[in-house]
Length: 267
View 1 (cartoon, one colour):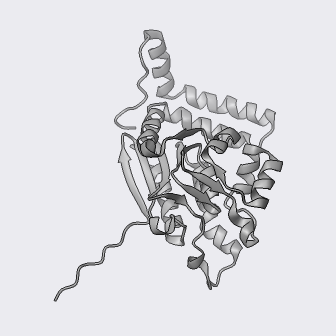
View 2 (tube, rainbow, N blue to C red):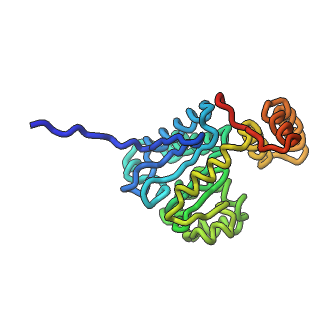
View 3 (cartoon, rainbow, N blue to C red):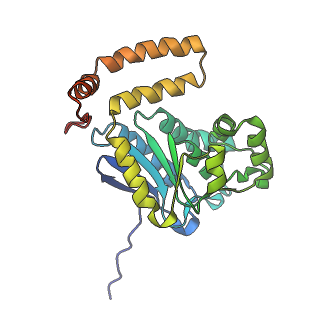
């Protein structure tokens, strides 16, 4: 009698379509709660995507009915590792990779985003939510502080006072309110969410990739710089953009009154 081979579902599913790489958190039975394998694999996939010319936009989403329920507490229970060591090993490199990636990262929040999952949802350059999605800074329920970048991101979106309230009371934010508060840019119907996200990402993938890389670089730097520093950075990066073939194509298309073609086969 032979036994059936055991197949191991990848913790991150990958799909590349029309220059859009979708990375799907794939632990649906646990609402995609994060363990080390998921976090380290996601970071590695993002780093690899940064070096692939065929990838112009990255989408992070979740399988099943959840986006990410935060840390899988069972995965760290009894581990001989401090909180600080765990964050430096897993979440902090992931958030730094997203913010430093030279390509737009869309977080497609298809369901609940809680705890560190909320931090991940907020880390995208553009946040797209399904109508049934929600976010909760759940840390205070277990007497911890928000981590994985939430203390940096959330007050910049909603202000200090609202951020503190959301963190202190651990109140759930629904999609409609998230849109009003600036926690997401668009809300799509649940039943068409994945198609709507793909269509949006393909629109973004048709834009000038090099210019968007520099735009992201400038915006991230400006978040912690003075006006003078931002002006100097703009002047430097504008020259880099102007020397690239995309600029010549954009100007040529404008003069010829035709759509610009910013996608080349070689990327």
